[in-house]
Length: 253
Image 1: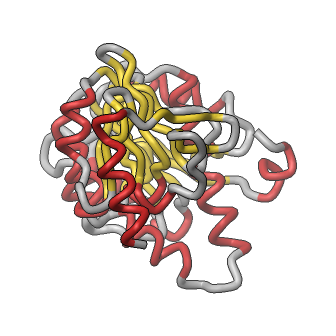
Image 2: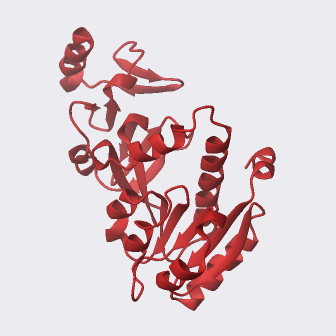
Image 3: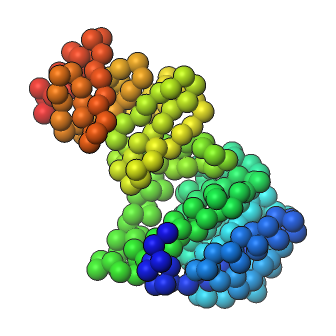
């Protein structure tokens, strides 16, 4: 994490979770991240709704299944400028969570490593918002990321990750795992799933199978040499069975 970035913003955060042990764990994590400032903990969403001053809160670590008012419904009723990281034992709420402006979605038990990644994502988002010349940029990006027709949800390392189609460069399959390479990270997102499963989730007008082990996003293809698609230092082979399809796409551009 860039130290200069950490100095630019201190994020006020709260925890809403009806499980005391889970709350204590997240408290300890927050206390170990110098740019997070814990200003309150609540055992119910209703209590948080009535007692907290939303204008003072930048980030909420929020459980979903709670008595009285669940986390999803709570999120629908707060200022969208207050970002949310859902922390829950249930992965089935992932898609719905991103419709209510969730920044991230962590599955319990949460490791400090995954928590820190979410915290860094929050800091980056706030710094981007703060320094943007266009005040509407962050809101527009948030709205775009919430369009479920433009994203894929991938389970990776006890997290449900939302990835925009437009950010994907290519996907590599290694046995029962896939590695998704994106524009915003030098490291791939690794998930336990087959190439067939991931191919079914992707729109064929945007993605193309070029090899039994590779899928590429069509508009990311910039260089082909000797039947290989070049992404920097990575060379993706184009198999004989897919060469006509690739050639047809290139000729149509």
